[in-house]
Length: 461
Image (cartoon, rainbow, N blue to C red; front, side, top):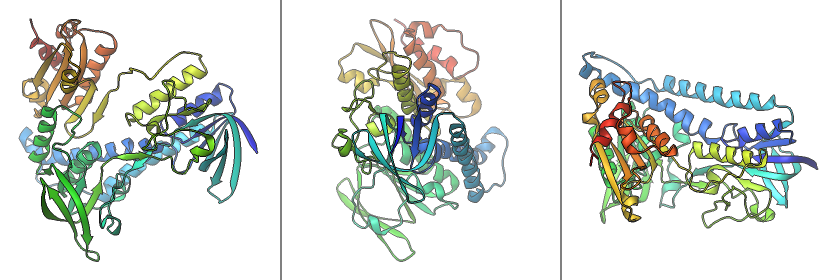
């Protein structure tokens, strides 16, 4: 049996950099990956989807270019070429990361599926079918999550798509039915509408992006419907049926009334679940919650000393940047002997629809729920000079501020470069900069960020 100082399971956005840093710090380390180096972000998430989003934006802009006085008389969407570009970028990231890891002294890179066989012991089923038993004093679990597939009559009998398999399409679906009106569903729905698909989005709750304020949900739906995307809320799919090689018929309950929707493809985008089933966590004594998420403390350590969980597998915000921040916290605590915690860290996120939806901190709904003494600043993008000049005034900026301390509690930006504008406010929040100070900052003209002056001018006493 091989013995290591540290075993990292999963080469995602926490596991990959952590393994390298542990090895460089002098720990004999092995990283085990059952599929592709780089995890979801590089292979099935951020990298490929944002590459496709860029292609979809190009198609959208070609269709809108006449508004800017540059009519494009004819253009075509070349899906095989779009897919190849995406695949090339993914492979560059995947192979680049793998090769960099393989060059690190003291780091072994192993491809296979790891399962705990006991306390601090695992068995790895290698790609060649052989098994390898390994021990270590410390374990770092970064195995991520996978698409959740609901139990719906007939779903297993149709060739449904997930956020992973839809990336393999080299053609444009005729009619894409999307189950789920949140990040994955909206990004893919808008993307394929721009490629040329008819798109219908079903959301079981009363509004899309339901974790956001109601005005954000309403504006997002307005934006999508302007692109002729059919958004149906309070909708629940109950049955699927497909004739051999033919159209799919979905039975859907909408506001309590049963309807039929015919489509060519179905994308399941109703959430993700942790990939813990095959880890054998019970053999290691590692506790999970009712959803299979690994339980961790504020230092990301499980109930078993020396076993840590990072990224999506522990539940909570499922973002690449959170996974990466998990790595930095664990590494700095263990190697640099710092005392860092995940408690109360500011979590920004961005949905890459067009326009983007960037969010950090609390929103108006949460401020009201907490009974805070707050004010709301709001500025439509129609009042933003840069948005007017570029011909895209969809959306708005919004911030929640504390009346007494005058600090920014949260911000939501639905608009062009929404994530970048949100990040300016995140920096202000991290630095304790008040909205009064932002109101009088000198921003370069005419940036989108310059309109943060005007956003907070509306709060003048």
